Length: 227
Image (cartoon, rainbow, N blue to C red):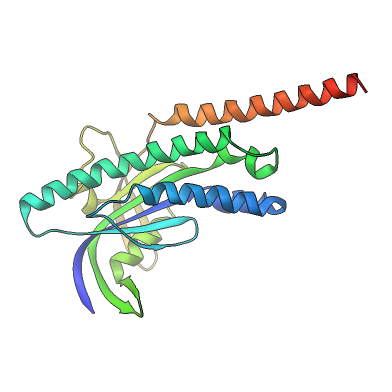
């Protein structure tokens, strides 16, 4: 088992539980939609960022912290770009799925309800092998996962711990400072960024679904009129 300095990230589909629970009768389409969104996030992952594991509606990512100052500066730039690009590709794919939705089932109609949230923390993690799998463990791994449950009244955001914010400063982007408190972990200082530039894709997805519904209803009425 080796302990290493690491950047820990979780890209989590917000609204997943409600999406699954309210679309039980169309689970095949529900899982297909979520699968496509997860694949979209994974396609954005490039070295030095790596996938630790898939966790249902989330992708657990990490990047080993480079001890070389020059190399680490390049890694930080790459992480900055990827954190923001996750939202761009997610919202674009959401729009594409809305446009190509195969039917009017509840899952396809509610695609636009899904959002993305990303948690970022810097700390240490123990790396160990279980068979062919590499597992990460340690207090900082617990912290990044625990932060998925937080006090933010929002469904889409990047939430960085103070440790992460100091090193992976989202240049030129305004963040909101806060504190998350957990009984067993104490208080954790945070910085939250709420993306807005991709909202147009969400609005377009909603309009597409409304237009599809209107077109279907109009066609249905037309058929009755000629029956």
